[in-house]
Amino acid sequence: MEVKPYVEYLDKEMTIMGILCAVSVAAPAGILHASVSKDLYGVLWQPEHFLISMGSVLCVFAALFFYKERSLLAWYYGQICLTEALGTKKSVVAELREWLRDADSWETWWPYCLGFTFLIAGFAEYSFALFCLLTPPHWPWLSANLSEAKLVLFLACPIVACLASPLRWYVRTHYKFSEDAWTDFLSDLLASLKRGVQPPHDGVYAKLMPSRLHGVGVFAIRRIPNGTYVFEPDDDALVSVPASATESLPAEIRRLYEDFCVLDEGEYQCPSSFNQLTPTWFLNNSKSPNMAVDSSLKFYALRDIESGEELTADYAAYSECQTEGHEEVT
Figure 1 (cartoon, rainbow, N blue to C red):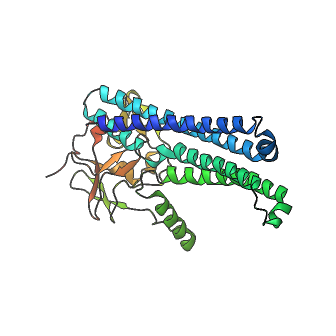
Figure 2 (figure 1 turned 90 degrees about the vertical axis):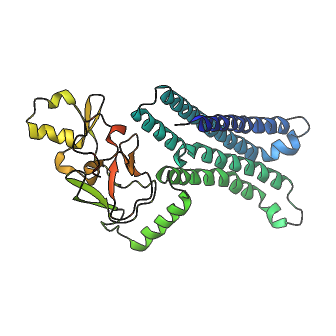
Figure 3 (figure 1 turned 180 degrees about the vertical axis):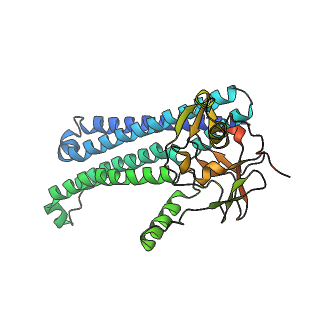
């Protein structure tokens, strides 16, 4: 897998984040230095120091978010390079693909979005300071209530920034693989307001059916768009069981671990109870899968999947379990 173009892209973005971080610190430093100078101290700093100070604080917060984004991109840069250096084994290629996918998700860029939110809020405070300083004389109503107006403007920007930031973070993290995160968020919000209580079929894409590949399989009951997490919500916590602890179990019990669980570095990753197996655990193996798994063992569609297709995954990409009897039937 060729990762050099994307690594170069991450390197450029890290440079941009560094520049934005520097600007977010240098700009308020320059403005503060100028406003407290002998020439402007009485003209600008004394009457507008509250607005100027708040603008500077917001810009510093923006710098921290840009620095966070740069650090996050650097971490992905290192993980991608390290994974590529490990070799070309199939499991390594799958892990590399997952790193690239995560690095390209909306979730990776939430500090960048919040940084711009606070940077805009900071410069808005500076603009309000100039506006109050240069209040038009033909606006007597504003001149008469200038103190109250300054208080409103002083509080407005940080409040708006603090309210907008959690919303932007939510959209970026919950719609991280969406092509248009805000459109999908608004669509889901409107749909939830219309329907009230969520019906049990909402978000269901597949069901269990007899499979030509191996026993029971998972089949799409409607079209599944590329990138969709098919089995959400799946909140059952995984339980780790050492493979050695299953060797003395009866054959049929041991077969549950071999058939359904993910073997990783000598430990089975299992459901909390085999009585709570969801459709996720019934995915069959295929050399040409239409499903992939992320680092949290959550399955998503590798391509658009049509109704009636069996959902399959490549076991070798995420598990050390043997796959006899699960190979694709032609």
